[in-house]
Image (cartoon, rainbow, N blue to C red):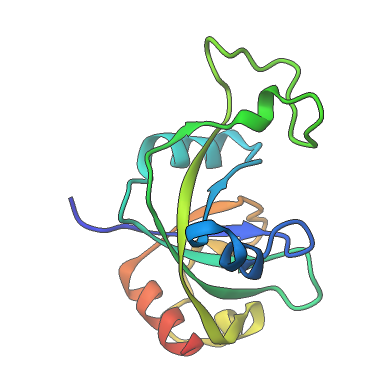
Length: 155
């Protein structure tokens, strides 16, 4: 199966690409997704070996900060069952998990983050899902040509 590409949003005040870089093995379980459409992508579509654009959102200048690779298959998100977690879901059932995550490993941090404004202004990225009006999904597909353009701009 061909490698696929994704954009995953994170708020750097909660978990940034630098936090990922400090993790053992530069790996982390991507948890806390609480949108069914994004959950379905994680659970049903994302596979080991897929590329990830790590996107910092919720800040003054949102930007793609670097790349990662998916290193595990989707698994139930343990935070849904943890009453101390801000991602706890009291309706989640361990016998039939509602929320999933996936482990990723940092590939690289961009020398120059690619801002949302740059994404909007770059030819070839006009159809990028993250740029669609009203899009708020934390996980979106990225076409191979979009991946190449964004990675080249971040180098």
